[in-house]
Length: 253
Image 1: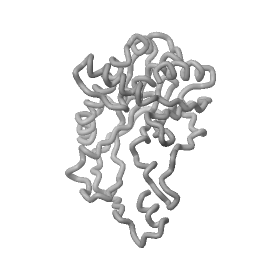
Image 2 (image 1 turned 60 degrees about the horizontal axis):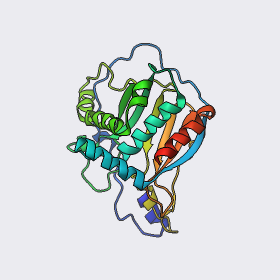
Image 3 (image 1 turned 120 degrees about the vertical axis):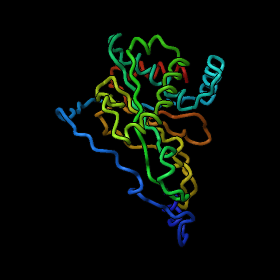
């Protein structure tokens, strides 16, 4: 996108040449699939925007550090808040499972095979799944949920390498497409807000996903300048649960 923007501004060529080398990503051994194809239920999600302040994020980071002696990321904190608040809002039975689906980058695990040039923009990701009961998430503190998320992320390397070697026969990512599942995408660090097509950098970049009704989704965005923190673009609950979700998130925002 930066290369296109530079051309739009009149540069004769991009300052960094984009490199796409899909063949560099190794293919894993094929495993025969069994059983019927998955079903895709349709929901009537509503769109909500909630901002989590930098002060709230930093406060939770401090709480986590005090409790564990470790550091955590902004993503960990916001994800823990959203996971807990959504579980409370949808109010499933205590023993019902609530799932979190995170798309994690694996480029750092493929550094020996991917192009090392600055312009390589290939997307290498692997899903990370977290499953707990509704009661477990309701009873857990934000700090405890942050720890769950960090544990799941820490297992990424082992699981991805196992998958690449043809393992994972027990399915590392067995997350159903039901109302208990929340899928996340972090757009806040992708650099979209730094792309200048000739009118200056955008004050705000967001996604149009109002027609996505298969799986509950949340997208993390940079808020409009000069604000800091994270803006949540949510399509993850139906109308009957939207007010409670927003109320619970605002308590933490």
